[in-house]
Figure 1: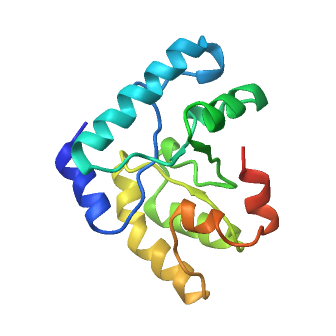
Figure 2 (figure 1 turned 90 degrees about the horizontal axis):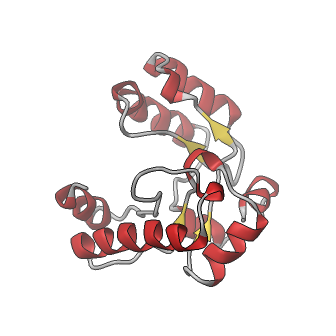
Length: 158
């Protein structure tokens, strides 16, 4: 973890989600191990930011109804997925990342990007500018979930 980066994220008005401690396939874990993943990650985020995540994204999007129920009811974490996958983990050119997301954007869309890939970071200014030029407003996942259900967002709720 990088506490200074976590604090900056929150200070700048962005939302932090739990994505597990070490990226396991949660649906293959025992409930005690899922709890340990959520607890350790939430605690690290809280220690750095004094805020506890309200949402989580399961690694690989691998989840199921039983797991979602547990995460929502017991861990108090709303499960979020995405409906636009930039596939940035395949290391496409930054321009390709931005163009793909802009082309597929629809109201309520959640775009999957990974900040660990340099090309993704480089793509962000043109991606953000392109979405805003099309009239989109960028909001946190929790903000989007408070809006009336758009068809794509409705499918994303665990």
